[in-house]
Length: 172
Image (cartoon, rainbow, N blue to C red; front, side):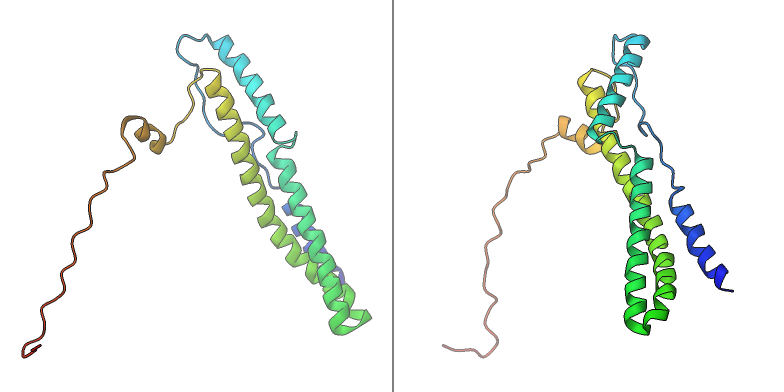
């Protein structure tokens, strides 16, 4: 029965390392007005390289795997320390197994979050580069609206405050 205890955390650790994310932009860009497709392809390649450099050369997959492995390792160490502190020397192994289990689960979640954050940063750098080169990129509704409408609203004076009338029978 003891080997089964060690197989489950190992399987979870492998799953945490299998989180995948795209290695390119997750947004669509189109050729700008008056640009040929070859110019667009060259801009796309250059902007992908630029976005990758902004991420320090790491892609979303690498960030996800690093985050998952780190969380599993920390969970194992904390579990081993807690097991040794609570149950003595013999419980350190069980604590490490439990720590690996929970660390792997937390690692899978951390890996997905890290991949999303890295992908979003990559996309932002890619969009900025493509926009600077005159290509068509997605723009949020808020940005579209602010171009055509002023976001500042006229400030109106607050309504004057009038005290309520005194109660019936009140005399001064």
